[in-house]
Image 1 (cartoon, rainbow, N blue to C red):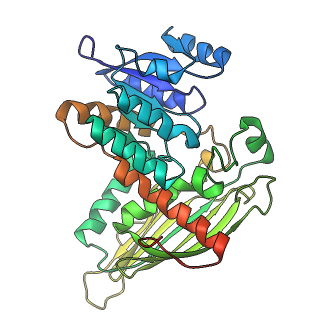
Image 2: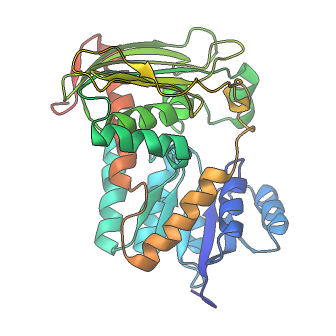
Length: 352
């Protein structure tokens, strides 16, 4: 820490790194110190655009920089654990873009490494930061909908073949870990689990690449059974043209809450034991969010919220808003969906 500010380093200077930078710049107790990228020209260009901060081509050298307190990780998904573990072993806190990683073993290893080093591990799922989403989470925790019956996520996005071709690593097993669910759908899967305030007991699924020339799925459907006994459905695609508003539907004995692109479009409840739920307010009008079809059309607001929280978590010695143990749940479920699709069997998550 220097002059009351936590020094940040960012590993990876792709599209998401700009949102990390925006979050750091907006936090009065944070300062970007250095960035790292294996492609020197790209990395130096980002460093220069970030006020001429230090540049490293080797992330192991960045994490050893004494001016860095927190390491932000925006590399391809399959490299997250390596970067976080290196940061932890250097005594640095880690702030990781979604997904936490793409394998259960790696996620366990990075969580353990941070625990052993006594450093914080925070993850980015920016949808959890939105005011409407936090209201819903609190309402379900209070039992406003009563016993939960169904929790569904419809995540029908569009990504072109050019999208997969230009990055090189997207749509690959080695670095992306999957397709429509692991990359785009993981936000909705995380949100569904967080809002349901429940874990999944079992899943049966189908997944394949129906349209895109990639080795992972562009279309997936899954049937869930939650530990509470509630049922659920997940549909995740990048094959729907031009894409639909992402939708989450939460149904309990006493009512329904529906979310379209993180906006509440229905909140209907009843106070009667056997009454018909009534809308508490008219559903909001909404348009299909830009990121449904354009991955660059996302806001930095969530990253600003989470960067500030990460800094405060360190100052107050508490867990970040989204710790590793919570962030891994969406990935664990997605991996179980892949296993079910591959084997044709129902997967019991606690036994798998």
